[in-house]
Length: 215
Figure 1 (cartoon, rainbow, N blue to C red):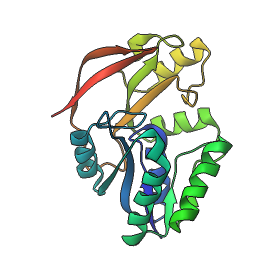
Figure 2: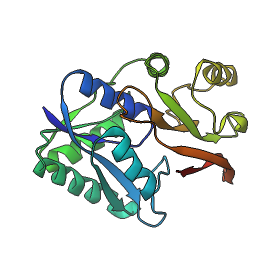
Figure 3: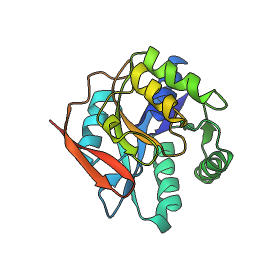
């Protein structure tokens, strides 16, 4: 089955992509929502150059969908419709267990005429984190809510030690409540590593964010 991957560049959507490829499905594109004003992807903050390099590293075309808050849903539907025109029969999402998010995505898929797929749905959050580490994915901790986690975790790779520190802090180690965000940089579905360098950190509200450049 041909599918479009709703891709955030983070660990969960990367693992969902892994599952779809493992099952023999064929991706036609990565649908990435981009904040029109900031010029970066929503939630994980990848700029246009980084998204271009993601397309090369994964070997899958990136379909950037610029949007503002009030146009987010319609822009997403338009992106899914373009993916359908490329041959996609389904759209895949990395959601785990938040019903409201799933319903919203199902509505967008219905409007675009695509079947929604949720390969991680109802899997244990901790189980998924350990699986992505076990599979050999390199996921950079892009941002940390420093009211909940040590800001020093920013810029580190998600591994057994960072998971241990998160558990000690008493947070959801999957980060589903916004405790942290990641950028997947290498692993089984990557043809080549994402070329990046962390220059330092920036304070944005409650978050410490890695200042990343791609080279």
